[in-house]
Length: 399
Image (cartoon, rainbow, N blue to C red):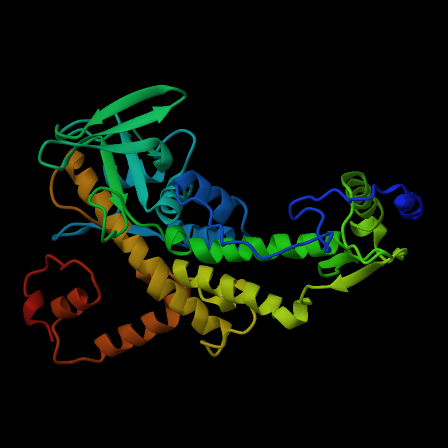
């Protein structure tokens, strides 16, 4: 015990043993170190920003699930298809997944890594693929040719590698990527942009947990000043004091236990309280930055302090209009262009905005404005609404 430790002070050698920094007057020192950011590779970012961060997890889930649930319509310049081999393939892309599961995985990979890869199994020119599969982006690498353009993709798993040749048409791999200003082959993910905010949020959570484990007390120092004015301890005394502090005065189970200080020991608190540091505000600010990077209004995540939108309905509408729809339209257009190489002909795949509940008010207002425009023909009205022209004679003359 600490009392026994002080009883041994008389056994100190005449010249106390000197130790570098370890046995100075301050026994327990917790100083601020340099900032340590987590690695920026896809595997680490996914683990820290998605699997280990509730804000990042919820942002990815919200965007991916909302975009994957959008109904899609397929059309060309002449008509909108109610049935088509492309629609049948998307509805049941493989035996293990349906449309929603496939697109959720695709959007998730795109948000987490900035890249998404879809593999077509079977098929050829004029023959639709039998199955579609989303491949893990962290296992895929681009194989550039002599001119810098990709000539293939290499998929590595379990020590084995498989190369997909993209020089043959139609391409077996569809590579969708986000814009990256400094990379010709890979996209920049929202998670990479939010990496620093994720580190701050995770560090804040760990700090809160450590604070609770330490009985919600700030750090401090045990200062020793001997009767002879010497403020040093020998190695055995130092090790025993540290062991006593760890076993009897740290951790939640020791909360409230009084500390017995004798023989020149004094406790000097050195840490700031959570209120002094405004720690909760720092954590909320980091959460808002993560939501901002993914394009999710903080109000939808329940993050306090955000008053950008007047109500939840406006925030949800902005979420669909500014985040979900642009992402879904870009991905659908890329998939349609890729599948057109199998099906032949120009196809347009896009979300059906008329079936999005969050945009019902905007849709009603737009339909009403277009319907009341008497100076437009029926064909022009259909074009404004994104509908294909009806092959009806005299349609252009209709008022």
